[in-house]
Length: 288
Image (cartoon, rainbow, N blue to C red):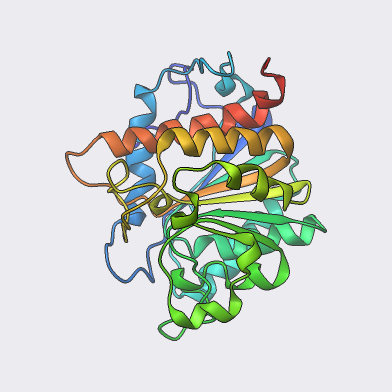
């Protein structure tokens, strides 16, 4: 049975009104074309959570005490189009609650509706995408709500900044803004991209993390692993800077497809989620 509590509360479930943080899972895996299993990611993630240490050394904090409420998962979609619509409607509803919203996939197509709802609330939104794939196809396998199209709309309607990209189809080149895309090949052995990319952001940032942005040596549990990805240390150092300098208004983590018996990636995902929360609430207070 899936763990329903996030934090060191014993068995006490945090009610919505008492929480500053909401966690919405969307275990949809309807359009992924190779490795399946992203619909199993959230259960594995939540069953890994009790094994975390809830004190974060770097920020000297226990962010779970802000209250993390786990919402009922969004499921039973009949098509990618219906999934997109339902996710957008739900996100719009949740944004009215003035809580910090976090989302857990499922495949990357779940982000399309989330981002659209955020754009309706924030006038000048930056979408920061960490990903191995550019996801800019206008449509794929008959749908514009396919995981391969996850960032197409955002590329036209928001300030999209892409990091870690190392795989794309030639048809996506026409939609790619090279000034705002940091290819993995150009990032190796340098850190100039960190400040360069942050300088391109508006104040309000929505963060979408496809776990295949990370190198498969540390994150093999994803549908389409690509060699040459980001390391853990580089990723969290960069994200800390983003949270320090910008107003991150929400985030999602997608494409986690657990591998039976391989627990290190499960733990990485749980730790990453908790790190992002620690940065959101405490990164600006860290003494340098």
